[in-house]
Length: 162
Image (cartoon, rainbow, N blue to C red; front, top):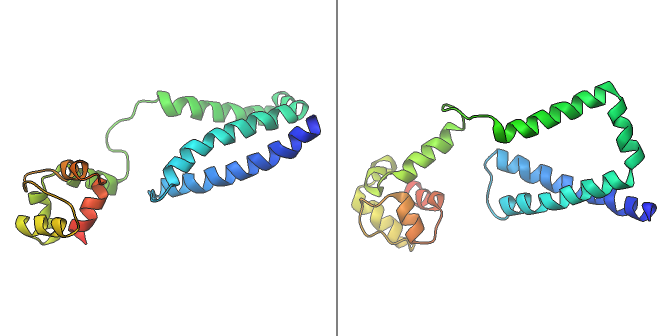
């Protein structure tokens, strides 16, 4: 049983770590197209399952790390980062300024975004209409337009700024 577990656990860890690592890096650099985000989120469960199986298959080796000070330091640091990631307060001023700019544009009326794209509000409405995005009024926010048309805010902004 243990040999069968080892023959599956280690390849599962390798494959899911590869997937999680690549998709995690893509998300870090805000490359969220296609299935990047759902693959990262859902296949993380396979990584957790693989880690549990790998730990079970290598239990003696695993427990030996708890007797070594350098290993304990790394494990403790990892535990602190994990706990801190959901307990630490977040203050303003952090984050990607381009993401903040995109959110500000999405919250603005299309008539206010139009001049940024060198368009009049009427031209902006027409440009969106040509791409199948209905706008009832230039005072509608990009966010509202996206929601009403089943689009992402970034898709609406891309049409306007293209």
